[in-house]
Length: 125
Image 1 (cartoon, rainbow, N blue to C red):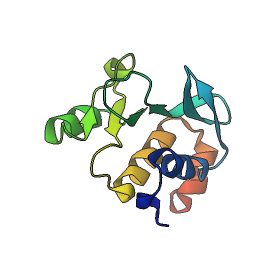
Image 2: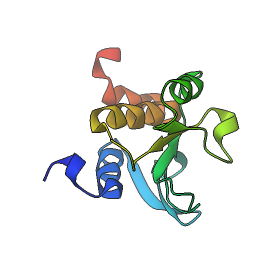
Image 3: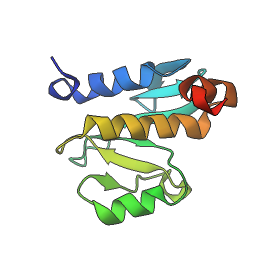
Image 4: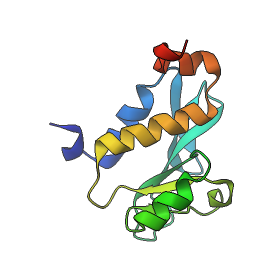
């Protein structure tokens, strides 16, 4: 079964845990992924019962505003962390898993130490 035919949580989990030293545990009642167990880079979001299944993650400066303006049906400003530039990504719409993988990797790069980022980007060494 391809990634896009599976449960969105399982697909997201696979992407997150494929990153160097990524771990998962519950935080605020939802699956959340951390770098080295400390810094959050993705939080699954299904607990607000607002008919929006998705995830939240840190994004490079300006990305949240750009994506929300371009595609408000797919991207949103999440509560609590949106004011810090975090991006909300819907998983209950037509999901482009290649794009999701890029968003997750960018979120990871926002919080991971340089030596772990270097493992993702060997050409940057």
